[in-house]
Amino acid sequence: MSDYPLPYNSSELTGRVALVTGASSGLGARFAEVLAGQGAAVVLAARRLDRLEALAEKIRSNGGRALAVQMDATQADSLMAAVTKGEEAFGTIDILVNNAGMPDAQRAHKMSVELIDQVLGVNLRGPWILACEVARRLIAAGKPGRIVNISSVAHFRYDGGGAALYAVTKTAIARMTEALSVEWAHYGINVNAIAPGMFVSEMTDGMFERMGGNPAQHLPRKRVPVPEQMDSTLLYLVAPASECVTGATIRIDDGQSARVRM
Image: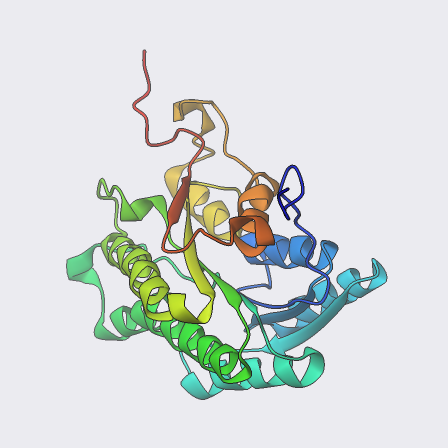
């Protein structure tokens, strides 16, 4: 007889502690609510503390546990402090969602050195430091864990348009995912990535404005997906059911990479 239930597909997270970066809006806010809804205590990290506090209160009013922590993704001390504060409140963080990111929205040759440093800091250096810090503490505690990095379909395809460095950082995130999954497999720490296409968010609101309107009519399924349609993938990657999955980058783009047939 198997020791596993049929099907082996629980998304119960009671007793788990999650840190979600970029949690003040968009995908990050949704990720945090979903994890809290499944029982995890959630540490909300981003720059805009007022938004984090409002989200934390919403989660608590629904019976969940949440802590708002102001964090600057470009500052190593701030990243470390977020982990420490979360650990002091709830215990060892065993789920990390590396969601914080920023677009560059400029042609590569027009970017200032300051902007280059900021994009690299938020999109790559910050996630690397956080992943290593969370893993270091898990290893010291002798606990397994799950790290989910947010890449992008720009990792697979870039057609120009002024986000070359963004695309490069998202490819780096995918490779980071693969490398760290090997590094920490022995310790039971799974490292995976989600590569979203265009989803409705605060970031895409600005992009739509620059494009002159919602691009849904130009997409294969005539729609721009919403964050809720990513819930199942996130839960799969942090729940027990995906215990053998590590080093994967899962593309969620609603068919946007397909060519539109006329």
